Image (cartoon, rainbow, N blue to C red; front, top):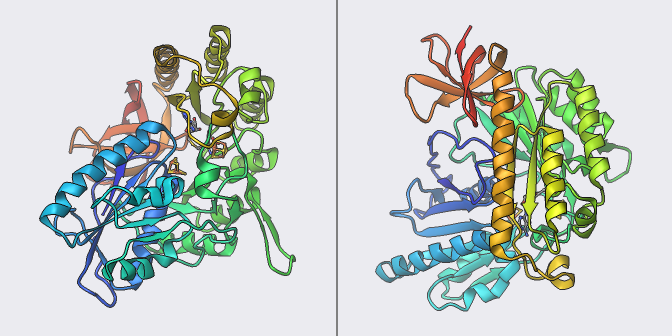
Length: 470
Ligand code: SAH
Ligand code: SF4
Ligand code: F3S
């Protein structure tokens, strides 16, 4: 099973626990349990890992109990993301004492960052595998069976796992992720991703469209195209006769079926262009929602962060989105207390939020990551209590804006895709609007998860809208 362990506020809905137990093609009787931490890219990778191992006779277990192999697919984005994994590894070390043949693997971004160092702790980790080495897992597991420790953290310039059909784990059968690219070439000075995921590369668009078609055939209703910077997607065929941009890929995916909703994440403000906005505007099934991380509202800090845009550019981008797609939902990522940030510069972040009116934001305080440009060049000089106080101010502003925005939706009707039961009540459904706002509404005995319904909004909270099917 795939269990989501995130240190972010849930980016995508946490799906109803409809766990999938896969029966292996050539069962070898061994069961694998995968826990995923961090971003949606890791969730998608866990589904590739399950697929690779299924081909080799392993079944994915629903529960940790009874599993022969436990993989932690890890995140290194902030220090607390890694702390969580260390705590989990200490727990697993205790489990290994009761079950000496239990294999524990660390995969993903923390594996890539710490490499063989993860093996230093006695009796804790048997296997360390980076994000580009998952095809090697069967060999590495064989090595562990031979009594050796196994490591492969080689990064690749080509690997996209293009032709691997992911095994949908923890799926509600309605929403799925499709990974369209890997790595990142941006080098934002605070960020560890370019070091853990390597160079940017784009996946063959035909394999992406095929994956979307397979999902539609299996009854799925929504796909999210995933990449660290989707707008810089660029693919050229080997003979160079075909070149596909993100705008084209988005349209190709939208054309798979009018019944399939298409979302994407994440957009970098420097790369999202009018072409993409036009594709969104003219294709009804491409959702009017953009996750557009600003990180800061101050131009000096943005330059230090190496984001390559300034405050004015960011605000102009938001204005352009609202001009071409007036009802577009926009969300943001913000970091408080980056190196040398002054109180006035922090105020600029708050005012950027006020002007932009984000529907919601993921908000963090700065966590220095070893090896990044910022760690090498700048002092992490804002005291933790100041970072946290600024973060709280940012959170307060966002909550106020979200609530006020939600209030303006009262009386309106939205087309909502039913995703399942609401968390709080079995008599209510939950589902999101085109703009990605969560809606809760009473079941009507007619419609089912996977159906589109029109929901009229009667009330709201900071996080969701409450309405009725009309
Ligand atoms: N590719 C995306 C972001 C990926 S990481 C983009 O460019 O927008 C997700 C978010 O984590 C970032 O947007 C940033 O807000 C946050 N983040 C990344 N590194 C961080 C760090 N060192 N400290 C605190 N937050 C960080
Ligand atoms: Fe990190 Fe910047 Fe790349 Fe996003 S764009 S993954 S923040 S380096
Ligand atoms: Fe974390 Fe790696 Fe994603 S560092 S945020 S899991 S790309």
